[in-house]
Amino acid sequence: MQIRKKVVTVIVPGVNSISLDLVVSSRTTLRTINIFWGDATSTKLKVRVFQSLIALPENVNISFMDLSAPHAPIVR
Image (cartoon, rainbow, N blue to C red; front, side, top):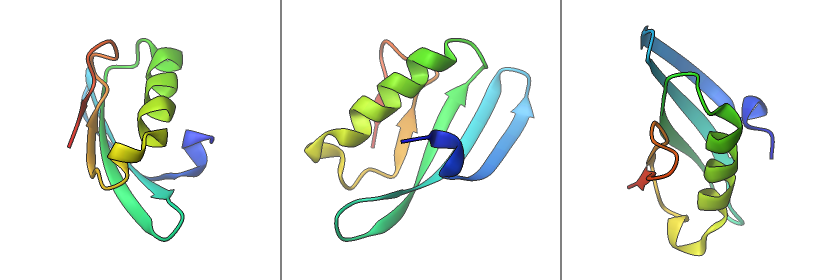
């Protein structure tokens, strides 16, 4: 999945603060997930973490993901 094709909104309130809204689909629904990206470092790792987390069945209903610390992501 290419993240850039899913981006609906990008908010950059500061140099180290990027937030994205992505539209993702599951088998039955489309939904928007707000992602707190943090800064622009570790982009490849953040993409891999996003893809891994979004693929997990237990994350089918999440609406928020914090990838600012990609080794310790948060989902809600």
